[in-house]
View 1 (spheres, rainbow, N blue to C red):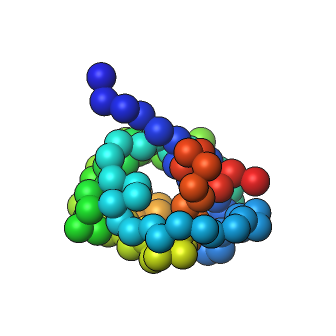
View 2: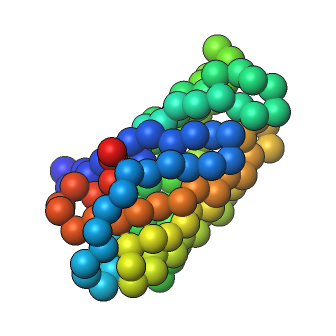
Length: 127
């Protein structure tokens, strides 16, 4: 079985992400998160006010490409999707972004998230 880590333990789907404060001490890069990760999140769809929950698996490579499979529930309607496009970038201070595109039948066809990598072997900051 592939090593599975946890990423993006919570995020806000209304267009902003909030993370606790941290001290970046190492030089990070895309290679810092390369591999398979699990993620989950919930929030509110800003356009309709409907509740949203999602879980999935994402694989990052060192070149800034990713693959993403997710189960999303929007207002009680479930979707199982695979991203048609997924890119990310991690800067030397540990801050980065992730953008992915899902099929048009999913109410969240494209999302961009802020990422913060910390050096305590805990993956993404979950404060």
